[in-house]
Each structure stands twice: as C-alpha cells, then as structure tokens.
Image 1 (cartoon, rainbow, N blue to C red):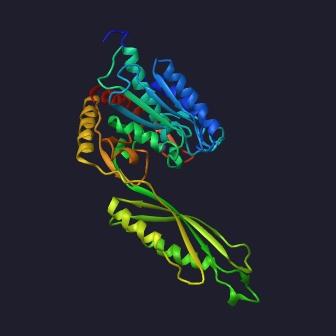
Image 2: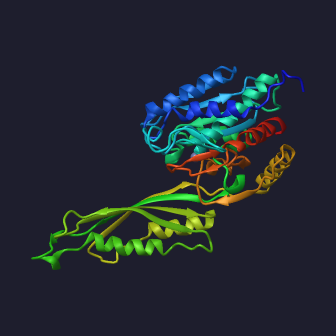
Image 3: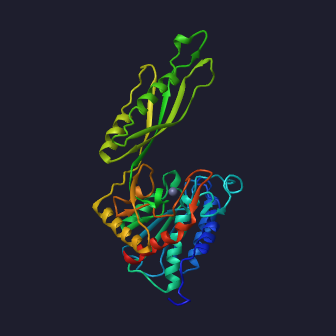
Length: 377
Ligand SMILES: [Zn+2]
C-alpha cells in the first residue's frame, strides 16, 4: 500500500459521528430531524452521491434516498437502511448525555441507535469514492426520519426500495458481543377503551359501573397471554382513567404492545385480542390497533447472506455471530421482500437511555464489514 492509499480512520469516523450526534433529532421535532438530514445530505453531496429528498408529512421530518455516484439508476442494488431520528428530547446532549469519549467508550444521544451505524455506512461509500473504486451493484442508502415511532410515513418508501434490492443492510446497533440480527419478532400495538357508568361513590355506589375495575380485569387477561415458551409477550405499558377518588370511573383506557414470533401466533393472538368482551355486561370495551411490524424470520436466503458476512468478518479479523431479538426495526418490513441483515451498525450499549454509548474500537471493523458487503454482493 502506498502512503496515499486512503484508510478508514477511527478519529475521522468519530469526528463525523460527533457532528451528526450533536444535531439532536427527536422523532417528534420535524425541524430538528431536518437539520440532521441537511448535514447528512451535505456530507453525501461532498462525495458526489445522488440525493433524492422526500418532504416529511404528518408532522415528521424528511427522508433521504442516497444513490452511489456509480451504477445504473434503475438496476437492482444494495439497500442500506438507517434512521436519523432518536428517542431523546432536545437537551439530552447538554445535560444527561453530552458527547464525550472515555477510553474506548463514546457517549451521546442516538450515538448507538443509530447515528453511529448510519455514519459508518456513509463512511464506507466515502472510502470507495476516495479510493476510486466502484461496486458491481449500485448502493442506495435510505435514511428515514421516524423509525422510532414505527415508520408510519416511510414504510411505503422502504418497501418500494426493498423490491429493487438484492440485499438489505440495516445499520441498527450491534447486540451483545457485536452480534448482528437475522430475526426479529413482529410488533403489534393496541389501545383498549372501557366505558362504565359514573356515580357518587358515597351515596349511589351501587348505580356505578367502574371502568377502572373492568379495565383492571382486562389487563390481567391480556398480560396472561404472555408465553415465554413460544415467544409471545403482551405488555400493558400505559394506563389512565377516572376523574376523582369519590367518583365511580366512567372511563379508563390502556395501551399495550404485543410481540409475536411468527405469523401463525400473531394471527391467533390478534384475533383473540380483537374478540375481547367485557366481564361486566354494563360496561363496553373497545379495542383499536393491530400489527405494526410483521415478524422477520431467518430464511435460507438470509442464512446464506449471514454466512457470507461471517466470512468477510473473519477476513477483517473478528468472529461475527447472529441472534434473534424481540425488538422491531425497519428490517421487519424488508425481510420478506429481500434478504435482510440487521444490527450491522456500531457496537455499544444503552440504546434509548441516558448512558447511550458506542465502543470506539468497533468503528473501523464494522465500517470494513459494510465496505466488504458493498464490494462483494
Ligand atoms: Zn434504531
């Protein structure tokens, strides 16, 4: 190698990630998300990539579809999938989790989930441009603005791009020991609304029909659907209702999340939820919601793609393992359309917490793995 051969440099990667992390971008703040989109767009423009920006709608920010400077516009390609929103409110950077590096750990809101991963995917393309190399397939990097709330405005775009992809590489964070993800449970979300009859709790208690009491019984039924043996879980995560301690509650509601390991279990569990009837016939129970993200199963094509990635990793100098997770991602939308590897982003821990962090030593090997996939698929 000559001294002029470009190399992936840890300090440069870290500085680039810092610039993206220091533009805070909570999903619900479209203007903030668009500021980081501006930065990503200008970084990509600087290496000559083609940029197609889809304006946000329904209160969300813009989506970016980047295409490598080489390759046929319409040819099947490699889809790299990232999100630029985070779960962290503005101010997290200034107070709870400022960007800082301590030994091998770099902290910051969204640094692990997933600005670090999105950035190394960019850096892999930049590396090719600097080295004057191209890939057999065009590379399309889709960065969406609202993954953390289930990608309501980008799902159609994600699926459209997956349909012209030979493989989908999702830069969600790596899991324990740098594992990538080759299967994810499906996710369903529901709300349950109970209406009862209000009454004075002192003088006319017998006339009341407590919505809270009914909801409490429904919650126990719902949570009892959880079956760790099959992988079905139901979590009632939000409850509200009632007005005063001395009023029989006329209204109560809850929100719950269901994780399903496969379509058969999903169908049965969702049917059961939708058929819920009240214990007390004087109350009414209404359920809304349904499957948000379908399950993502490790198909033979995905297993083959994983084996290929594992060989590339061995050549780089690390042992790549995979796992199945209950967490959902945009990979759930693509896995049934094109072979998908997920969790190809940076290694670290603390996603969605105030100690969110990446491991600096993972940056170059993981960028090299993406680069290897770009060059060999
Ligand atoms: Zn994420």
